[in-house]
Amino acid sequence: MMNQHREEDALRGQAVKNQKAIWDKTLEMRFLLQKAFSTSNKLPQEPIRARFCNHDKQIEQAYDDLLNSSKQTLSSMMELQEAMLESNQATKGANEMPSASNGDNDEWSEVQRLQTRITTFRNTEIDKWQRKIQVTTGAAALKGKLHAFNQNISDQVAGYMRDPSRMINRMYLTNSAVSVFGKDVGEPGTAEEGHNMEGDPELIDDSEFYQQLLKEFLESCDKGASESAIYALKKQQVKKRKLVDRRASKSRKIRYHVHEKVTNFMAPEPMVLPPMAPKLFENLFGNAS
Amino acid sequence: MAAASAAAEASGESKNEFLIRDDAPGLLAALKEMKDGLDLVRGKVEAITRKVKANQLPAANGIGYLEAKNHLLLGYCQDIVYYLLRKAKGLSVDGHPVVRSLVEIRLFLEKIRPIDKKAEYQIQKLTDAADNATVREKPGNAQAKGKDGHSDEEDLLKYRPNPDMMDTKPGPDGQDTDGVYRPPKFMPTSMDDEEKRRKNDSRRDKAIARVAIENPYIKEIIDDAADRPEEWKETVGDESREFGRYMRQREEQEKQEEELFTRAPVTKRDKQIEKRIRRQLHGLGGLTDGFDLGMNMLLGGDKEDDGGSSKSHGKSGNRKKHLKSSKKRKRH
Image (cartoon, rainbow over all chains, first blue to last red; front, side, top):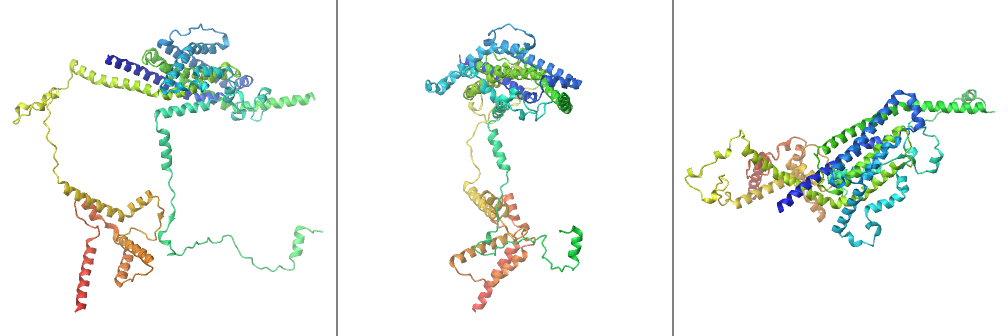
């Protein structure tokens, strides 16, 4: 009986290790995407984009390559998600939805279809684990006192998403922060931008969350990384110690400081002006009268 | 009026042309950089997909919460790539559901952080169980190989000593069930005298302490550790041990003088010693100081040598004898 339990635990442990490996790989993808994500805010929008393409065929080709690459990357990511859903029993038949293609918005409909498919599974699992943690830590005893904190995570997020404008506004970048290609820095914004003084809705910034993820990842790699880094920095700083003569106390030595020599100084020399000097200066600089 | 507006329009267009011409190389570089980044990501995604499809990363028996977390992050990456795609097309993202989706997933990942912290122990327990299982499997596999596979390696146990051939046969406890001979264990005994060793140790410690106190480098290290300010000295070069001893003596004397408000009389002999030491100060007198002691310590000798040169000891000894004899003579 015990042996069977041990085997089950070992199998489960191996699966958990695989899940952690997938998480690490996905996190690595997220980190690799950051550079492209921040650069994408510099790309011009349609009228200017067309001008750039007309100006240089290389740019047009580069745009085509980028479009193809991003489409392929997106489809490979969706393929990975499909494979993960298939391999997991709990999500195998979850919310199968027919793929609706509507031309230009085809990619987004595919992404949305996949995300909707895992919504139920995601909410159930997260809420279940939240309850589990509350029971083990005794947080369930606070029920009723702090209603907002004792809500299910999925409910909390749903509450936020009823009016996400505040969260979305926090992610906007200002025009001054990003120099868009083909746009003059001093160019006045459109009427829409005038309303939105906080930031441009076309420029989404996610660096705060990215840094958070990066910090967590580094901490998980090496628990004492931050502390040891701080300690190492402190050790690197050389202590400045005072230079003292211990035998100079109690008036055993005369204390004095040698002044630096005065530089660029000359005592005035008395000078007798010749009688023709005033006349000479008058002729030189013109008569005052 | 119309001409003026046309001129303004023309100047605006020329300005735009200038901007496009200036920014074209930068845009081209940015587009290539983005494409390279996406290609790299795609390579990694395809590698994982292959593994997942080939069931090399089976996660069916895993924790559902971790699975949900993986899907969240993957969904987030998909949203970012779609955002890039939209930007590359030159389309607007204002009010598009991709921004809303980014915010939603970000909220989820932020909200589940406390669960991560608290579930860490349970997850660690499971991974440890998996590690232990793999460790247990390895020796088993090795044994199976040894039995089934005809390895070229000889059985090393056949070279074990045969107890029957020995004069004094050990008891049954000397032999174990696995066929490996283990010699009988006797009571552990110490051969060296405890008292003698303690004396030697204390003597060596005293000698080391004395050397440490007199050594300027060790003194500097101690000062550094105690965060004392650096001492500024007028002397140059290495100080001999004799000079150090003399200076300590002088400082002690000065302290006593200051306490008692009286000057101690300085004899002619003291003046001579001071003069000799001052003369030696900038020479190479202190170069071999402590060499004898160091050698004794290395060779394990127990001589309680002070480390000074033997000549100086001899001189001082002779001087003392002379002084004694002269005093005796004076008395007569």
